[in-house]
Each structure stands twice: as C-alpha cells, then as structure tokens.
Length: 69
Image (cartoon, rainbow, N blue to C red; front, side, top):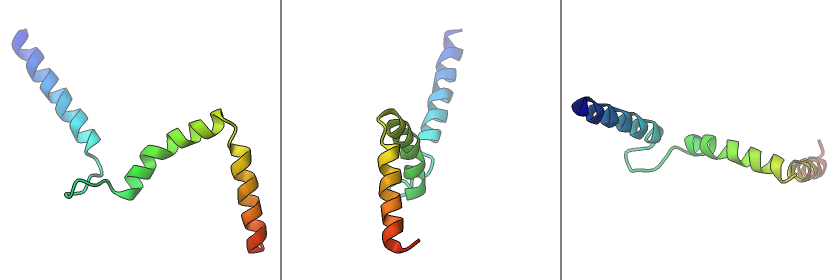
C-alpha cells in the first residue's frame, strides 16, 4: 500500500503541474488571454462585492457619450 500511495501522489502532482502550466509559453510567460481568463472571475466577484459595478456603468456611459454613441 505504501508503494501505490507514492505513485498516486506523483501522478496527481503531475496533473496539477500540467494544469498550472496551461498557456505558458516556452519563455515562461503566460498568453495574455490565459492571464485575463485567470483574473476576470476574481475581478467580477470583487466588483460585485464592493459595489463597483455602478461606477463602471457610469464611467462607460460617460465614455460612450463622449464618443457620440
């Protein structure tokens, strides 16, 4: 049983490393879309939690007004 636990942990660690490395370029940098996909869910939760949605809507409407749309 002790031998199989070590192999299972190694495979799980390998899978987690593969998931964490998704979107990383050979130079070690993530693709910008992957980085945005990682950040946007947290940004949305924080915006809802702190009521910043109304501020963003107000800013977007003023920008649209300046652009003439």
